[in-house]
Length: 56
Image 1 (cartoon, one colour):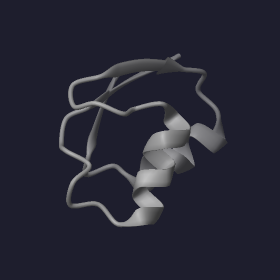
Image 2 (cartoon, rainbow, N blue to C red; image 1 turned 135 degrees about the vertical axis):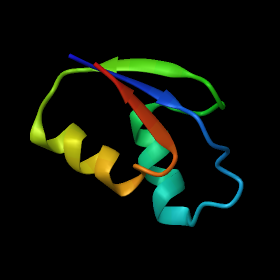
Image 3 (cartoon, helix red, strand yellow; image 1 turned 45 degrees about the vertical axis):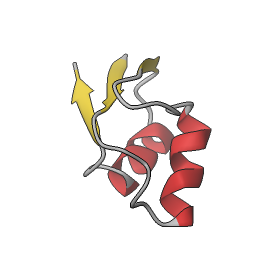
Image 4 (cartoon, rainbow, N blue to C red; image 1 turned 180 degrees about the vertical axis):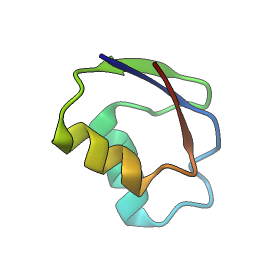
């Protein structure tokens, strides 16, 4: 399992990055979610790695 926290605002993001955050369910700053560790989730996190913090 991977725990992810949105640490930066979505305001300066491009639309593709906002869609990734929406798909992950991270809508508010400092919101935390837990996901299964699989390649699809890892790829999504790689697209927004400058906005999120991964907590193992």
